[in-house]
Length: 245
Length: 222
Ligand SMILES: Nc1ncnc2c1ncn2[C@@H]1O[C@H](COP(=O)(O)OP(=O)(O)OP(=O)(O)O)[C@@H](O)[C@H]1O
Ligand SMILES: [Mg+2]
Image (cartoon, rainbow over all chains, first blue to last red; front, side):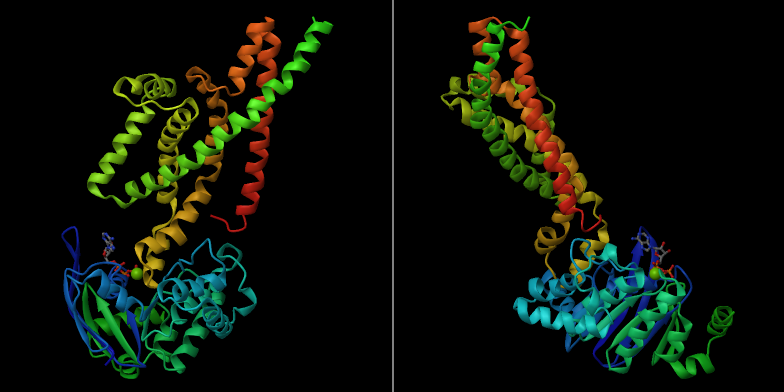
């Protein structure tokens, strides 16, 4: 196990959005998180990377234990340097080229020598099929291309775990395909990934574990194969039937 | 009207006006504006970061400076401060007042620019492990300045003209030089139009620079 959280709660202005979430992720695991809109999937990911501060919760990461509510700035920085995050709307740095988007975290946050960072960034961009676009600004790229650069940015530092929040839902099906292909490749290479997604194909065919969230709870979690073939909970079956259509 | 005498005065005065323009008006504008930008960025960062007491001080500063006439500020510093033993030469006094005055306006411009940068840029920076100040310096501030650029360019153009107020505290900039020639020659209409045209040329050059700058900066779209 590389990362686990337990008892994560979060409320926004009195409304509970997470009511005690437990989740455990093994090294090399690919976990898909499914669930209807508003069930708290984004909030969970954001709490796991401290973009939101959970009201309570315990995180175990790479052998250390953290209190998710009272985590310090230094602890956050340590964890973030070992994780990657891919946003639904890409959030590439608009004043940086594709290459600079990837080198920024290496050079500035990790103090890597520039030449080394550029080598790594070029190799990573090549991996996601964006090498030819290294000197382009985000505004000069399509959504699918931006997301692939964003993935390169997230994985360039060789993180222990990468979070994806609906990485394809802002994209046309065709562009989404490019991005999913990259993610499938990463999964096959053994990258540890936690993916919030509406792309059922990806969840079914790529992820190893699937988590179904609804009403701020984890309804069902299990290995993907049995999750899709023989869901235990009635509610999961309903959800899957609806998504199939 | 354009007698030989008048043409002679105009030709004669041209350099006498232009030279203080180049040696006083422009340096006064450039130095003051550079200092104003330093003040403005610092104040904008304080307001954006919402640090309690500092933010109140910043707001007080902006409130006072924007709510009082520039001319009054010049007089307070140059004619008023000597009362409490602070004597400042005309040029540095003008620089201080223009910088503080312009700083307040530009601070608001830059703060608005910072607020116009989508929050996702900050979050993306956090997620790649950068610190607040690193994100500010490398991601948010450059974008905010890019957004503010047209407004800031407008400010420096206004300021070029406003430096004529420094004549009131005995800085011999372009306008003061003109006034002196008028006193000798009694040709106010032509001479004041002449100096007006020189201001117009200065501002036209700045407008051109603004367009050029926008093109240069425009490679990444905001
Ligand atoms: N910053 C916030 N302030 C207030 N309420 C919020 C905030 N972020 C999320 N919420 C609320 O929390 C609930 C869960 O939101 P969340 O974005 O986590 O859902 P989700 O499962 O990711 O949904 P979707 O599939 O639509 O992305 C929603 O009701 C949402 O309105
Ligand atoms: Mg979401």
